[in-house]
Amino acid sequence: MTYVVGITGGIATGKSTIANYLRDQGFKVLDMDQMAHQVQQPHTRGYRAIVDHFGPEILNDQGQIDRKALGRIVFSNPDALEWLNQLIHPLVFQALEDQIQMTTDPFLFVEVPLLYETGRLEFYDQVWVAFLPYAIQIQRLMARDQLDQGEAQERIASQLPTKDKADQADVVICTAHDLKQTYSQITKALQELPNPL
Image (cartoon, rainbow, N blue to C red; front, side, top):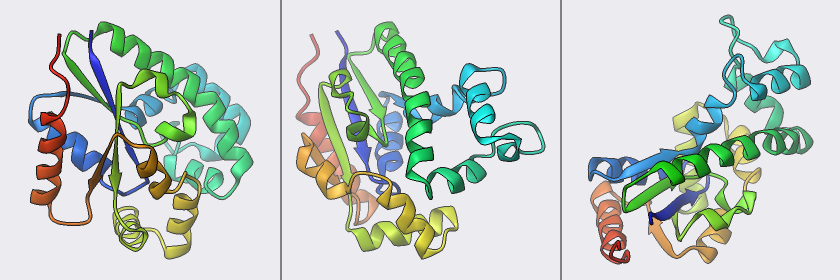
């Protein structure tokens, strides 16, 4: 039986840094954002529903969903975000369930930005949260996604506060410092995982 660890946290808090380190250490890591993008590719049910709902103006020149255009809509309109989540989440969770059943690895890590927001905790044996102070989160998000402060605050506000996620976590990894300190915390968390059967 595979032991499944969910990795979550707010936007731009270091989830991918944790996931990439785990990959480098030889662990299998799934990315729920990538899975969500796959269910929005042309000729999928998700793609057709999104284009029907939001219109062709969300498509780029290649006929694919322009994630930035869609993001501008859903991160400024809670109803639109809720509609999109209601469409995408069941598709993604079915794909996750399939992946969990197929894996033979003793541990599986899943990077899940909206782990607590979706309420689907039954998939995870343990939850790790990437955490850093709000001011640093704003700075990182603005730099990473070339957003102004208002846009960054909108995106952060669309998710459960990172502190609330940390309060519910089995493991909290502070990513506010250098990578060496972050990696040290990850190594400690790995050492505390149960031995696989």
